[in-house]
Structure formats: structure tokens, C-alpha cells
Amino acid sequence: MGGVDSSLKTIESAPEQTDKLKELYGQVLYRLERYDECKSVYTDLIRNSQDEYEEERKTNLAAVVAAMSQWEKAPTEDLGLPESTYELCYNAACSLIGQGKLTEALNKLQQAEELCRVSLADDSDMTEEDIQSELAVIHSQMAYVMQLQGRTDEALQLYNQVIKLKPSDVGLLAVTANNIITINKDQNVFDSKKKVKLTNAEGVEYKLAKKQLQAIDFNKALLAMYTNQADQCRKLSSSLQAQNPGHPRPVLIQVAQLCREKQHSRAIELLQQFSDQNPESASGIKLTMAQLYLVQGHVTKACDVLRSIEEFKHKPGMVSALVTMYSHEEDIDSAIDVFKQAIEHYQSEQPGSATHLALVREAANFKLKYGRKKEAISDLEQLWKQNTKDVHTLAQLISAYSLVDTDKAKSLSKHLPSADTMSFNVDVDELENSHGATYVRKKAAKVVGENPPKEQGHGEVKKKKKKKKGKLPKNYDPKVTPDPERWLPMKERSYYRGKKKGKKKDQIGKGTQGATAGASAELDASKTASSPPTSPRPGSASGSSTAPASGVVPPRQQKPSSSGTTRKKAPQKKKKGGKGGW
Image 1 (cartoon, rainbow, N blue to C red):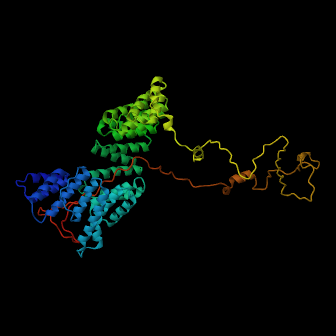
Image 2 (image 1 turned 90 degrees about the vertical axis):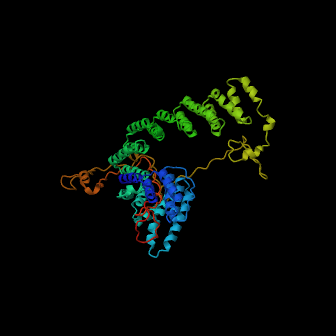
Image 3 (image 1 turned 60 degrees about the horizontal axis):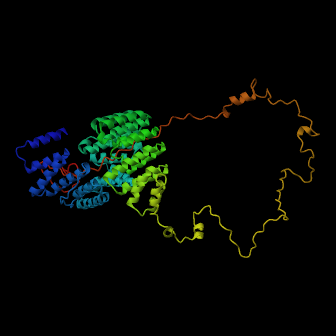
């Protein structure tokens, strides 16, 4: 930026601000990302100039508006800019992306593609490859929109098509490669290591905005973590923290690396230190701290951290999480206190709102669930006053008052509807036969033409169960008489003569001289299982999620010619000068 800064000083020190000098002044302000001043310069030029360069000035003004929408999230105003060229249409799409209108942005990019093809079709020197190279920036932007919409497969396919074209614009290649890395995350890291080289190309820092360069650096640190390059990850994240001291992401990357190394206590210390130094951006940091405490089993500490987040502590989701964790720790008093603080907040900020009444209802149900009927009375009274026709709440209120004030319970019971008004025409048989009815004793249905079963009298004989026939041996021969002594042990039978002697179990002398059978088996290599040693395997990747994509490809902007003005040129195969940047 040193050369750009010196250019700015030279322009500002000029004795006379001509239109040509103002054109150059706008370009310099755009490079320095001083978009408000740049917008004023181009607006003044368009208002006070009437020449053949008006379309180029409007293109540059559209690029400024798009940059303000994307990088500064500034509200866009309708300046009445046309969309007659593909550059103007492309810049309008960039503005829509900054506003989050992704579907409209994609339609606008398709319109820009059509305009580009039409404008280049008249040039006979332009080949299809040249046209695709010119369309690369539009296609990369389309892929970015698809990625934001969750259509990652389509986006990845389009990104790879742009990479294969090898466009000469190093900024376009860097953004496209970075966005592929964000899709890969902790998968396909070898492809990511190849793509990250494209982000280191010479001149990239002059083509991209600061936020794009910052996102690319974040993703380099994350890729180092996913590839188990711990030292490189720490080095990059520390450098990022020095460059962006108030940004939480470098700290989160360091914490993720520490968690991969099982250093949870050190990670919590780092988060606490950043939270103390930067309280304005500590919300996300404290949520991470609470998660780490839960991983270590310190539920109460996690609750304390969550309750210290002023921005979230009264949100229904946070109240639900805190009550669940306190209930798990059987700390019912703290859970009720969370309800109390949240209800008081909404009572003062949004009394009677849906969120307020929902919290009161949940607080009452929680207290009744844990037998705190006395404490639930005030909540139930508030709910009943909001809707006196709510019979369920009234019944709960009467039940709670019955333990405290029976007279009050009796007086409230007068508001219950009478039995006549609550009676309904209910078909009992249909109710019993309905799906889901359980433990219902049904009468046996009478069958026409069949006699009812008789009761068993004293004179009747019970039926005997048939015994199963025993299985015969496989070698049974009916012609041979079975051995009558087959039931006796072998030693007790009359024909038993004892075991024969003279044979030894372990015979020596049949193998190698001096060796036994057992030793031979042990020395036999063919009888031992062998397997090659296994090499250690790397652990699975885990940690923080990939940083967001480095953003959209910067808006297209026209550069002034050497004479100081931005000239409109006819598309040619061999370009001279031309539009600068985006």
C-alpha cells in the first residue's frame, strides 16, 4: 500500500483537481478501501461530466456500492444505475449478495453471463476458450452463491472448472482455491494443500480486499491444524492474533489446537484471558469456555460462564439449557432462580409477550414437577389472569392453593365449569376399542351356533398330556438284542478286563535324536503364526470448524487509461490496458 499512499498524497497536493485527476483519485480511494469518499468522487463526476466515458464511471460507482454492501454491510441505496452491460449486472449481483438476497443474486449473475456471451459473440477473434476465461469471474461468483445456499457439490464442480481454465487473474484463482479449501474442511487435505499454494501467488495482496486476505490466512492456520502441523498452526494463529488483536477467531484456532493435544485447562485459560481483555466480543468465547467445562464434567462452572453472558442469558434457548444443566446437578433452587430472572426481564421489557408467557408457563410446570406448589402459585395466577377460560391452569392453581389456603381453593373452585357443561356424548365401547386403549377388560363375545364352554365338574377326568417317544441311538439294530448291562458303568460290567499296559503316551526316539515331540512342535516354524508389524496410524482430525469462505470475488471496476481517463474498449483477443481489478 506504500505506493498507493504516496499516489494519494500527490493527487491531494495537486494545485488543480481536473476530471482526469478525479478519475485517478477515485481509483486510489477504492484501492485504499475508503469507499464513502470514493462514492462521493464518482457521484460528482457522473453529475458534472458529459462525455463518452459515462458508462465506465457508472460501472466503477456500482463496484463501490457492491464493496460497501459486502465488506462494510452498509445499507444500499438505489442510485438509478443501469444494468445494460455485464460488468454493471455483475456488480448489481455483488450488492445483492452483500444484502443476503442469494436467489436474486444468482439470477442476476446468469443475466450477466448472457450479456457477456452476447457482447463477445460479435468478435470473430474470440474463441470459446477466451469466452470461458472472461466468464470465469462470473462462474466463480455463481459457485460462491451456491456454496452459501448449501449446494456444495455444484459449487465445488464449478470452482474446479474455473481452476482448470488457469485464468491469468491471480486474485480470482486465490479466492476460488480458498473457497474449495473451505468446502474440503478436514477432508481431502491433500487437495487443500495443493490449492493453498494458489493463495500464495505473487501479487495476490494487491488484488483482494483486506477481509478476503484475512479469511485466507485464517484458513491456512486451520489447514495446518487439520494436517497435524501443530507448530505451524501456533505460528500462524499467533501472527493473526497480533495483526487482529480484538478478533476472536485466532484465539479459537489456538484453543482448537490445544484441545487436540488434550490441554483443556490451558485452552480455558487462554479463553478467559481473551474474554477479560475484550469483553465486547467475548460472547462466542464464553460459549466455547462453557463447552470445554462440560467436556471436563464441570457442569456448575459451565452454568456460571453462561449466566455471565449478558447478551444471551435471558434468551429462551439459554434459559432452557441452564435449567436442564441445573436439573442434572439436582440444583433446583438455581434453576428456579434462572426462571425468575428471565421472567423479571421480560416483565419489564416485553410484558405480556408470547415469550414472557411461555417462560411463566414453563416455570410453573417446573415448580409443580419438583413439588414446589407454593412457589408456583404466583406464576399460575398470572397465567390465569391472562386467560380466565384456561381450565387446566385453574385446576393447577386450585391444587396448589389446597396446600396453603383451603378457603382460597374453594373460592377458586367456583370458577370451574359445572359437570353438565363438561359432559360429552362419549361412546364407551368405541373408546375401549380405540387404538391405544390399554388394560381394558373386555367381555367375551357370544358366537351364534356354538355352545358356551362347560365348567369342569368333579366327575370329569382331566386330559393327560401325551409323552414324546424317546429317540433311539443312530446305530440301533432291532434284530440285535440290547446289552442288558448297558446301564452299568464299564468297570462294573462282567466282561470288563481292565486297560492294556505297555503303550506309553509320549514315545521317545521317533523324532530327531534327543528331541521330544513337544520341542519339535515349538521349533517348527510352519506351525507359528507370523504377521508383519503394523505402522502407527495418525489420529482422527477434530477441532474448530473451517473459517468462512474468503467472500465473494471482488466487484469489477474499470481502470483509467494511461492518459488518466477510463476508456471503454471493444473486446479483443489480445488486450491492452483494460479494466483493472474487478
